[in-house]
Amino acid sequence: MWIDGEWLLRRGRWAWSVGRWVVVPPHVRYSPWTLARGADGARYFAPGAFWDADGKPVDPPPPLVAAKPATAPVVDSEGITETVGRTLRALPADAPSSAPVAVPSGGSAPVEPVR
Image 1 (cartoon, helix red, strand yellow):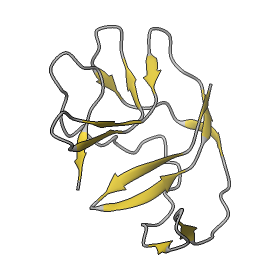
Image 2 (spheres, rainbow, N blue to C red; image 1 turned 180 degrees about the vertical axis):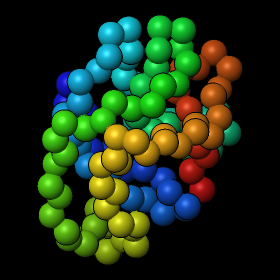
Image 3 (tube, rainbow, N blue to C red; image 1 turned 30 degrees about the vertical axis):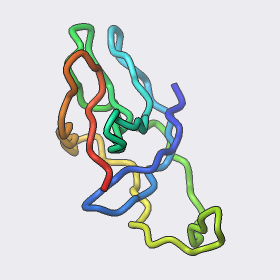
Image 4 (cartoon, rainbow, N blue to C red; image 1 turned 120 degrees about the horizontal axis):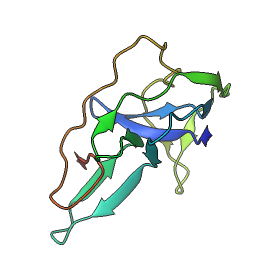
């Protein structure tokens, strides 16, 4: 399965996680990243994650091949260069995954408030 690259919020800065090919184990599903706005206007970010059949998070499978990103400044729609974090390389197979920040009631994806 191809997992698209995505922006991840790390220590208050956005960092690019490269796309990669993985072999997804049986009975594991992937939910892509999402950004949602709450009724109060707050934004909530949920990174892409892998889940077992019981809806519990599981460590991502190791990448078979990762994309090779080009290094370039990030420019927003108004032409302003944004301050972002470094590009995140694919994790080694033995690296622990990071724990989700929170799981909303009735939801299935970890979310992190965007400030």
